[in-house]
Figure 1: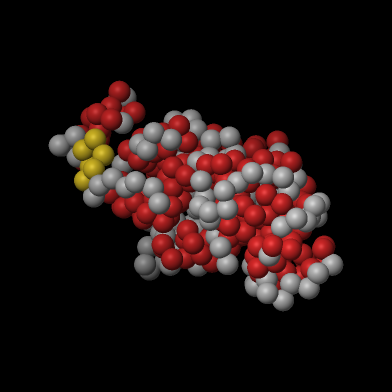
Figure 2: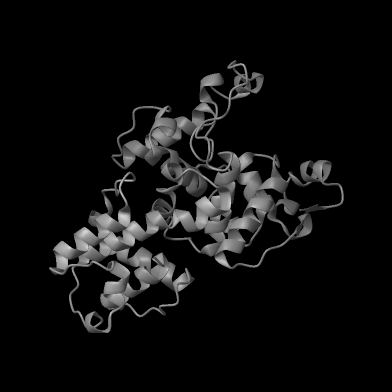
Length: 310
């Protein structure tokens, strides 16, 4: 099932004008975001990750259009006799789009990182909805690669303890103590960040029982990462650096330093390759936002030649 093409055809049936090429380009992204904004109430419930989404999707579409879809939703909407359908139920199309977004993790995550689907499934849909103003393929690439590094290729939602189960010494250096160690996909740390995220949830009437939910609840694991990316970092909305393809500045904004910069860039190139974007193996400090900040000298300590090579 070509999820991008399915979304494009579905939107065109509702009056959009997209090329049905199966490519997640900027116009497809903007159209998805527009549809989600107009029908946000239909995106409150998540698909059941333990059921084959396409089977449930076919059932919903069948009930909605009173048609038996033995050959699947994509085959149905590609059929010449069905392309003239007017008024295909918005609820049905919203489910199709939502299901496709969740299943896209196989395209962006499972094959690239061999990551567990239960962790990665909510990410793309949440990003599409919550990062609507600044999202494009470059931003998506940088966000996914940073989360991949911080979460050990989407295998962990919490900073690892020592092998013997003891608390690492550096946990005591976090402002707020060891219990404010990293949690969530982007490893939220420090008491002030946890407090600000709690305030964000309160302002938006989002149920939140405490910092451990960043580990036990995937919704908060993902949402806290998007919140930090957009407004929690001391460097402001990280998208402005991602839009300039500046992984040096993006890493500083996420990590507060340059820890794992080479690995982050390698992961970035993997995601870019899966999205058909140009990859780079060398990034120069002189082309980075960091060059004009006090962090320039810190970068030079790690990379004295003035660039990072991968």
